[in-house]
Each structure stands twice: as structure tokens, then as C-alpha cells.
Amino acid sequence: MNLKLIAIGEAARKMNVSIDTLRRWDKTGRFVAIRKSGKRFYREDDVEDFIRRIDIATSDIYKIAQEWVLSVKPTELEEIFYCPNSLVFQSQVMKFEKNLAQVVGIENTFPLISAIVGEIGNNSFDHNLGSWVDVPGIFFGYDLEKREVVLADRGQGILKTLKRVRPKLDSDEEALRVAFSEIVSGRAPEARGNGLKFVKSVVVNNEIKLLFKTGSAKLNLKKGDRGLDIKKEKDHIQGCIILINF
Image (cartoon, rainbow, N blue to C red; front, side, top):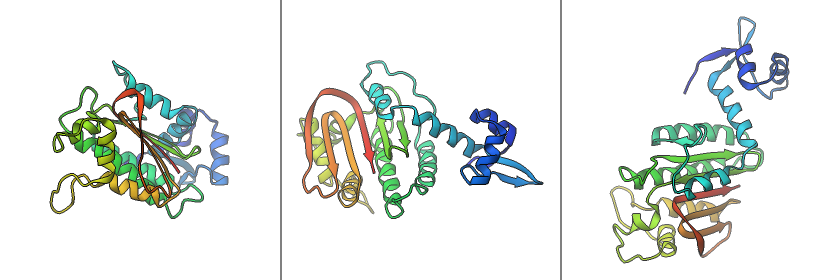
């Protein structure tokens, strides 16, 4: 975490607001300053998070991620969405959970939402380590106003990953079903491949909706679902794209 403090003037310039606006936000609690010797300072990380949220609020995050995974020659992702390795991703998840905790009405579920986001992202890194098709790392963006999270990768996808241990799998739809319903293999002390089953359990027991696409397969999952609603899509994506609504 970057603990560097910046003066109110620099913060105002970066955020494209006036110093008076920042003073007013400090008084109302919207964006609180740190007082030192009577002057207002801000954590550089907090300023960057604020800018990130404003940028995302004017974007269609899912559309950006979808265009990225569908493109033959992927464009370079904006830094606010790109996690090139698991350490960067874990840092972003910590910031996400901190912001998520401020959302009204999800006081009991925000740790679970953060947990499934972390599980899905880690799944991408674990199963593509050293085997990324073209762009390593994942897309991770969220809009707390819309209450949505988007993750995506241009990895090998669920089918190719599972065929290493289930060579008879022959479709994206079947591979997606196995990923969300079966423990494929064991690795002490935990069952390998259990991550997406955990995600399923959290979603069906809470007010959360999940859209998970890989290859030509699409899964829709929501609270109360007993089975898996998996369909074949016309578009074929490289890797995976996931939308979480809460």
C-alpha cells in the first residue's frame, strides 16, 4: 500500500476539482483529508482510487472486457483494469473489499463477494501459469454504483485446462458443468479444482448473480438455483469473462 501523502493542491489538480470542493467534501465526510499542522493532506492511493471510480462510472466495464477477450489481436488494457500478475491482483482485491465495505445493504455479504472475486481471479492465474496464450494476467474492474464486478482473461479457457485431467471432455459446455459441479483431482491438504464450486455455493445462497463465459459456453447462476443453466453461445471467446452483480 502506498502511504505517501500529497497536499490538497496536488490532490485537487489530479482529481480535476477545486481546492474549495475538496475542503467541502472533507467537512461533509465525502472525501476526508488527513490533518497535519492544520493543513489538509491526502493519501495518494485514496486519490487514485477516487479517480479510478470516476473513470469507471462513465464506462461500460463489461463491454470493454468483452471486446478485449473477443479481439483477435488484443488491444492494450488501461492500467486501471489490468492485473499482470497475482500480486497486483491481490492488492486490487484488498482495495476493492475496502470500498465494497462502504456499500449500504451488503454488510453481511461483502466479504463473500470479495472472496468469490478473489477465487475467480486466482483461478485464472493458477490454471494459466506459464501457459498464457498471448496476454498474461487478467482484466479486473468494478462499478459500485451499478453493483457489478467484471473479470476476464485471455488464457486457455476451461475446456483446455480440464482436458489435462479429463481428456474425454469434448465441449465447452460440458467442461463448464464439470468446473462448477465436480472436484477434478486432489492436492493435499485441499481439493484442487474446488474453487468454482465454492463460488457456486456463495452465489446460490446469497443475493448475487453470476454470468460466466468460456469458449462458446455460458453459465447463468443466481440465488436459489439448484441446477446449472449452461447454454451454447454463437461467439467464441478466448479464455473467460465473468460478470458478478450484487
